[in-house]
Image 1 (cartoon, rainbow, N blue to C red):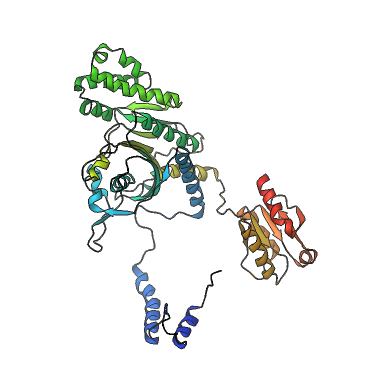
Image 2 (cartoon, rainbow, N blue to C red; image 1 turned 30 degrees about the vertical axis):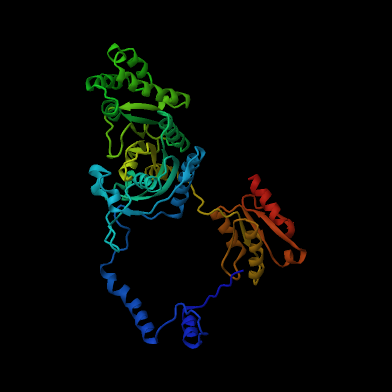
Length: 473
């Protein structure tokens, strides 16, 4: 067992001033002189008073604190998202919150002006990461990784005008899933769309639609497959008219398209994608949208975003326009921008808008006044008698060591009613009560907070009984 030495600040200073160090001993936190201590103490006392008149306590623009209640909701959202990523075989990855500035420049087009630059620190020009995609591409190139399926949850920073009501912040969390590597066409793309549907359906936000940008489909057909622009525009006419899964077969029947080799190749990819989406059972959730434009320069193929379709399901809720709640696309050239030899690693991925989803869930909870447990405490250790702190401490240690989530009140002689009220307010399901009588008989009272029923349990069987009740609830 490690030994921990804890001393009050003044006692620590006295000890360091009076005790002699053995030769070779390391002195940690020693005070150099009494005058320095006095000066430091005076500065600490004066500083708050000097600045109080013009000092406003607030969070920076575009940021916010999250209360314990909000953290519970946020963690549930993220846990659900990550569990879906893991279900699809993704590995976790993390990267630094800031990157070399040169790694981020010329990757975001017009949005590059929204990047937060940091002051020169030790000769390196640094910037806070703008998203999780570019750092992932840098990681792949730097480590010469040619194939990877990864997820990443982390904060990013953008100097845009925040709209707090719509879940837009300057500091916000992203949950990303990406597939890197050379694979047969449209299989990874279809899986990304499937993941997006699974997450949005699981969060029960209401009906949604994933829009695919025809602009980028057209660009890929013309630039990569050599399709004539007028043929691509003919395909675009179909997209504009029909917009869904039925458009592919209709386009195949158009003689001006079916007689063009490049057009057939492009249509073949679209047909393949919709075949996979149909097999995944999500084709009806996908629609082309001519108005959807690329936001970032690194996208090279189809991009997509998910929007909530219908107003809230309950009349009491006010409509909340948060824009897209998820987005993604293909970026086959980004890794090559970091590789010295320009070697490309095709990639496709998606990002879940946690803050926007959280805004919807939070508003819904406020509307219906839902109560949220901010702790996961399973059992509370209580006593009806005075001078029983030591027994409570011994008992709670047994519960902690058994892996149970337990609490007690930080008072020598708390009132039993106060302890029971705390359990009711915090939603703690069980209470164990120890007093003189229980100690004498070798038992512990186990109380259900909801029913207020109490039973005496032998101490050696207490943990097993608690675990049994928790598993049944």
